[in-house]
Amino acid sequence: MNYRHAYHAGNFADVVKHIVLTRLVTYLQRKDKAFRIFDTHAGIGTYDLTSEQAQKTGEWKEGVKRVREAREMPAQVREIIVPWLAAVETEPEGFYPGSPQIVRHLMRKQDRLTLYELHEEDFAALSQRFKGDYQTRVLNLDGWLAAGAHLPPKEGRGMVLVDPPFEVGNDFDQMIDTLQKARKRFAGGTVALWYPVKRREHTDEWLGTLRALEFPDLLNIELYIREPRKPGMLNGCGMVIANPPYTLKAEMNALLPWLAKILAQDKGAGFRIQDLSKR
Image (tube, rainbow, N blue to C red; front, top):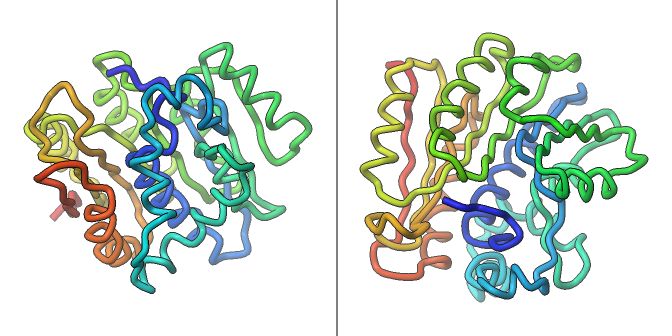
């Protein structure tokens, strides 16, 4: 699956991923002590929705545009997505923030952000965007090395966001390896793994592998815009969160039914929430 993000920025998968991301960061902010966020596949930070790539697919029209223009939004849903909406609103008209920009918007003066980007052109753009920002470190390194080399953070608190491009066949295996390394080196930290859903059978097999590893606290959430059976299409997406905030499951139970309705593109749209923890 080719997931060069300029083509897909602001789509339904970004909406899900970034709302969850803001909930995780917001929870970390409940304590005054500093935290660090690691983004293993950072991209360029912000995306121009008027660019040739974004216009070619128009996916943002079926994602962020639908949510922003929704006529009916329950009060509880609005409360959950306000931090994400606020980050989106900080961008100029026609732009959508990637994960680095969303996290940076939420950070306090004591918090830190480490960004990994291996693609040379994207790294150059990302470095320029955060030039002179003492709270943000941009590294031209393979993000898969982060869990082994740079954990735990000196702050002692934080999160690792893993959002690979899925251009090669071993990204699912790499995510499991990253989770295992993070558990050993940063047991109290949160790890969030984003993944695409094409066929439910494939993701169920992977999730079964994760369940068998017997992590003490592992939550999975998924959203589908259509029945997840067509292998050549991005039919949904999911996030596995290790050490999730205790509030997250209830928030997702409130949010995902509404999102599934707003973002549906065909029959079979829906969601699921699973506890993958050791029983």
